[in-house]
Length: 281
Image 1 (cartoon, rainbow, N blue to C red):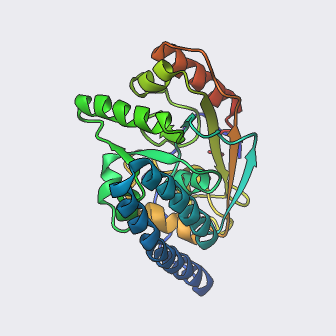
Image 2 (image 1 turned 180 degrees about the vertical axis):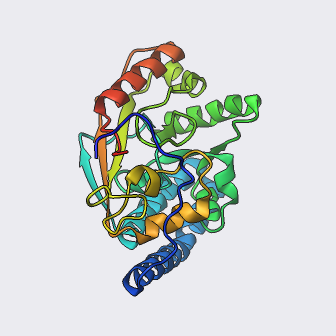
């Protein structure tokens, strides 16, 4: 189905009935994701303890733990990833569009990095704890002063040669287009003149239809993407019941030499948009 530019109400509900095969798939994936997250907690605890001795070493261990957790989560949830281009080098600032909770594990499986995430994730059961342990940076977008604090944190990580990734739109969206980037978080990379790598993420499900609860995956902008006022529970269930999710990631050439944060944000937005394949609507 071609992208129409307009999206149905994100509150469209999936059919409540599931056959035994679908029920088994949902149970297996949710249980597998929970068990793998539980297995990765000791790595997170070790990285948190290591941070007490050497913060940057603890963050490096946390980035390793994030990649390990992401790899297992892809297996548990039945997600296949196809990547094009060269992943961001150490000490770079990576910028991606944001479509789904899957973005974290898809990108986290491809290279070691420290994520910048919204503050609400820190309170999520399981995932929030693991995120805090591995050194994820959280931002409260309702507090203007939090941006200044976060820029200092980002500067420390980049100075230590760690790779930082942000979802620059500030929210997730349905994949019809790339939303404008928030320039405020580009202050530090523009001042430090580090390589800034554009990343475009997109999703398909087998068949991409015929509807939000189709047996071949449904519309991915409703079943995979998480946007609008979608509650997390139904979103997680929709992901677990899809036979297979196909994620595509395109790494672009790094942007260098732009010392103005607004110009840097605009150039990265242009490049991500050029690399992006819209999600079927």
